[in-house]
Length: 410
Image (cartoon, rainbow, N blue to C red; front, side):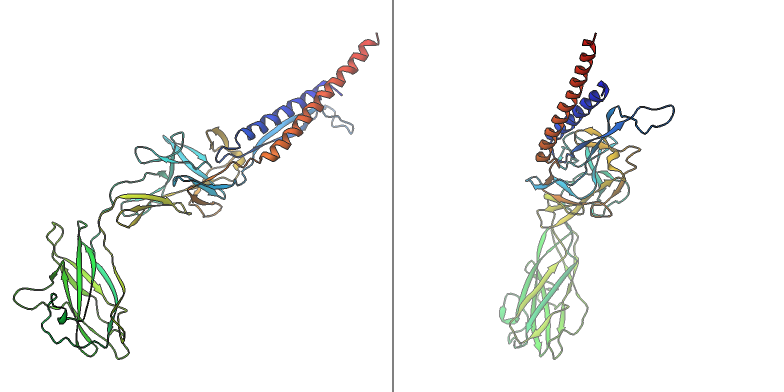
């Protein structure tokens, strides 16, 4: 027994306590990955080869390995808190310097960039004004807070049921102000190129069995009406004896507006699916493809990293997509502090992709990944390391007593 073995044991136990202390101190650090001190035995080199009775000279720290196991995911109230469930790291950029993180506590800076607590920007695929992603090299993600551009209505999809039991109106010609001149009517809001809303009304006049004329009005003004002539119908519907619509092309309805927008603009009204059965008039579907301008009301991040903005006009748009990076050997990453790592030759290059693809995990918005430190296990490890320290100190004390005995032999 020598002092060297005991001193190496004390050093090893001290390093183990350092690692345990660091784990315990980061038990509440979001995205933290616990470390484990791993040791190796030490033998003196022999010029004549290894002997069968060779005695070791102690221990040393072989590596302090981080454990990249999944931490628990807990909900938060911040929509910019994002947790990774599975493999991968957030790819961060700080003036071009790329780092990696598991801590998904993000916020917006004054320029609309998604940043972490150190100011590093989250990267991913950016989207253009039409919501199309640029899936080339990842770039800093920026939330565009400008108003959503209005979209002119070009199509209306109307699925109705016209009452086959209706009779031909006795009052003619059609007059939208006189309900006795038509059988049924409906209305839908449509939008011009500036996002102004207009009311497109349609009126249905039965002309004979299985035949109907369709009239239309824009903001209360009959379309095709030139006083004093009667309004012009925009189309006709014919039905088979089983109540199904005889196929016909959509009606092109020109709308004239005085708002400064493009005028006139044409709306295509498609009646495919409309029926004529012996039940009351009903509107089964009435949809149009236009909308007014809208302001960004909020956004969310989906499981595949897509950032979807919600607007005050009820529309949504893709604002970008978060990417993740993974490594062949995550234990080769170098810790930088501030919940960041950088790649090294040992980790291998970053393998970048979208969440849920390949070995990459999925994202959960309004949630954070807690530290994976198990406090119960760390306290037990602390006791064990303390006992190891005491035992190694005892070997030194015993060696001292042996030497003292030798000295006393004089």
